[in-house]
Length: 343
Image (cartoon, rainbow, N blue to C red):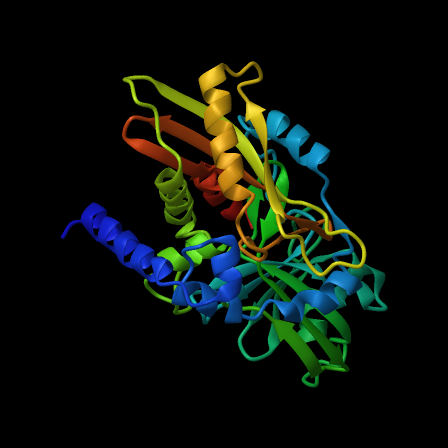
């Protein structure tokens, strides 16, 4: 079977699993979530609660996310997302890369060290590979001084990494954060989520749950599944026409004293600004579908300015063949490859 047939066959299998719903909670809200949904809920995510209180204390508002769309939807990144941050590579687990938001270098008593950007590698321990000053010049003498400390006692305090960051409408985001704390070179504790996927649909589309690949590899297949499922409830266009519109999907704030909302997600229409009647009908159909998705269908993104982003930017195309939903992050993959090459 070619790739397209395999993908369609995989979707059919997943849909049959969804129809065989086992979770009462899922049945109430989704009506067709099955064993895959229950598996998805078991993936570790509550471990991030500590980091929400410790670092990621603010959530990006709807107004700012909408403004970012208009500002960046056609823009090219002007600089590397690694600029101004330490970078780190995980040579195992598919050679992941990350931005070190909190670095032990910033706590070093030597001002020259504090002003440098570190290039790290993690292989059981954090190893410093290079020190680069503000002009991009490697500081080998300083590096030798640090790496010459065999006990690495200067590695002291907290370390916080966002893994596989991506540029997304002006934000730098990742669904995965790694936190650890050291005392004079010795690891005391750590907290990491290694198997987080951006949303249930991406999770359901995956055929492999190994460490190979990046978190956004199956993002587009997940978005297509969202469109396919919406099309099971809402009819496409019945003529030769076609409508395309862009939306912002986001999680509504939870009122104080509640653990979750019964209708946690909603949509905002971004473009066209002056939508015709048929486009508005389709938008409202998708909105109704999104607003019955259960809590935790979408995982948050973590930004390099220590905020939580619950939004997703989608382009939706509807014609007589059905619904096609595309995540703008997938469209930006080529731009991300360019800026990732500038670490």
